[in-house]
Length: 216
Image (cartoon, rainbow, N blue to C red):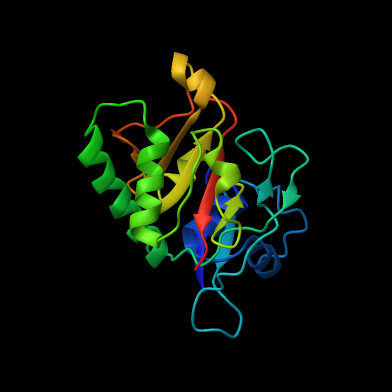
């Protein structure tokens, strides 16, 4: 059992993903009645009860079909992060991140080619052997739900974990306003890869943000 001092902007779902546990477990271990409300400056006990490894069970925070970046909307509950390791991602996630980096460097390098979904689909196929079709704002609906789980997580938290699939319904560019955007996190806190490596991934000018984690 370890302790963590809650910082401004922290969410229980984000901390659960970062430390490889679940929202329910954090809430239970810290007597938190409302998982959506944690107070900056307080100490959070992070660990497990009667186990020697982190509990990687899913939380309730994953929402399918919500429109906003925080899982808002009337989507169905599809659970929370699965198997996210405290050192930064699952084995599948790390494979996917490496495949995404390789796909991006083989396509546009650090310059967008307007083929984000092609890069992400190629990475998923090469890393996980899963075929996924669709453009940037369709790929979220085409990810097989027995292989990927949508989670409610901020972009800031997602970028710290390798191998998460990010999707946006729309971006500010001409093509992005039609086809959206998708990318895979590289786990360094700021970069993502699709048909190119975006070194400073932000939500600026983008709407309909969603995050998906590979299921172990």
